[in-house]
Image (cartoon, rainbow, N blue to C red):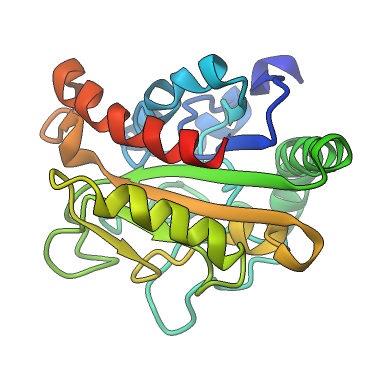
Length: 256
């Protein structure tokens, strides 16, 4: 269990979730994948590293080490589409972002059920338990679901994605005051473009746990990888990453 997750317990009212930065593919699953999939090309590269400052603010951080190709922690267990009518990926994705087949033989219903029990449910149990503890201690809890994606992915959106994409499920997953705090931070910088609730409104994690009427608030942050990676080879660019981190730190700090 421990090798599947990285979880830093801290004491602030914030939990950061990183569900798509994992590379671990169990051998019995890997042998049924095409070679390209072993490299996890659709990973949210280095997102946990971008948010590594969390410990300095006493913020908890949970990351799954399991590849999203094994099972996607940010999809509902019943595989209901998040964006009906738009292209999307499944609970256990069968195609890559560029529409290559991931598997030689697609996972069976039993395979998906087993992966849900082994990997998906424990991740969500950690989130639910930690949010309950935070709320009991502070009276409220804030969940930040942290993501990144290539700046251009024709399957999901046209043209180049804005730099910082905030999702609050159209204002349903967090209070207006929290959304306003985030908006103010983004308005007070001029390096990065940003949008709220456009292509990325928040996935299952944001929608499922965000319950502002009960003082649990959830926000998805989707970052364009062009701002910290060489997208041609997924190489981390420290100087560019540090510039982006200054804005991320302000975002987290305004909620702390």
